[in-house]
Image (cartoon, rainbow, N blue to C red):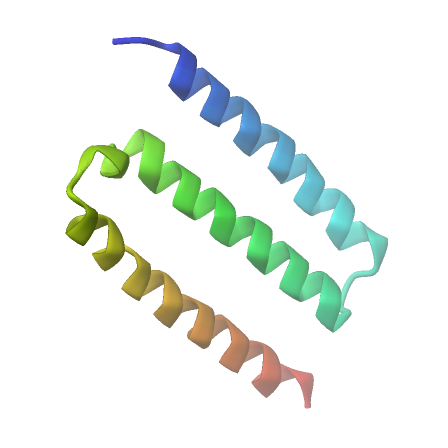
Length: 86
């Protein structure tokens, strides 16, 4: 097993986690910050699934099936943000 890809993904996740914290502390509680943190978290989830769960080696149909739960989670998060914004 080659260790370059998992180490690179881990390093990317560490950097984006630090980025999420910096984005959050730039203006906590604002709508744009919440959306920014959510987008960064979704990119991290996709990257983790593609590289660490080896979904990138699956057929394209399986790769597209992975996008359905991500879309549903995005709708859930946006609904919760709008519900708590009032």
